[in-house]
Image (cartoon, rainbow, N blue to C red; front, side, top):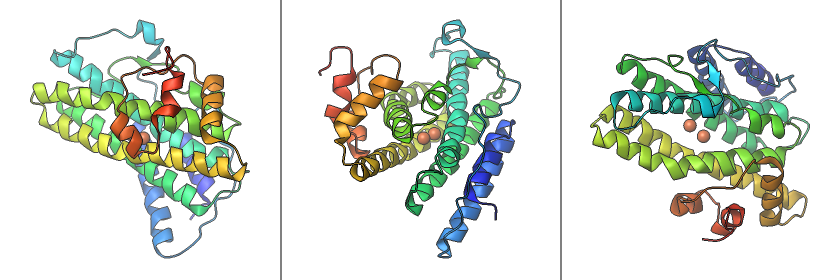
Length: 271
Ligand SMILES: [Fe+2]
Ligand SMILES: [Fe+2]
């Protein structure tokens, strides 16, 4: 078995979506089998690319130029599934990137267990969204997608705490806010396959946010820093713009993100 950081780099350098997720799931299975057998596999070091490899399609556009479609129409629902597929593929790379990028920081094995599990789940999520698109006669790559999703990774390329603050604790937490509304759209359309795929995603994303919060607090403890103050400082430094309510306060609480972490970062600064 390759050192984990090298597995991560191989996933990042794989361009095709389905191939990337197949490789990601196979590596995750190897890691988990070794861990279940009581082994302590090598983390090693790697040379992760600044931008992960991606397929030639979808075309990546500035968010302003991505055509908007009404979710009440079949085309609108396909566009929504396509947008989620794009987010999930980005998430696969984000989770392997955090593994490969920060190997100079000594971290417990549990850190790697968590991100390997999350990367495996993101791979499953991308596949689920591709299955839904294909069931509707479409596919990932058929529509344009948002450029700039990798920006958070680039901005925090040398700051692990910044990465944890912005990616799982802001961006993935945002997913918890918006997913219930998406599930409603597909329920109204009686699209059972998409409903169950999105419900799987929604349930598993809570843990990803929780991993972010857990390891952020762990590092604050190591450096004797106040987590809330540090979180606010890092999000103001690396995240562009305000956080937007309404928040899913219940799921955020379940994931270990209390209201005084996010409300001060909104436009008004309070509920
Ligand atoms: Fe996901
Ligand atoms: Fe996630």
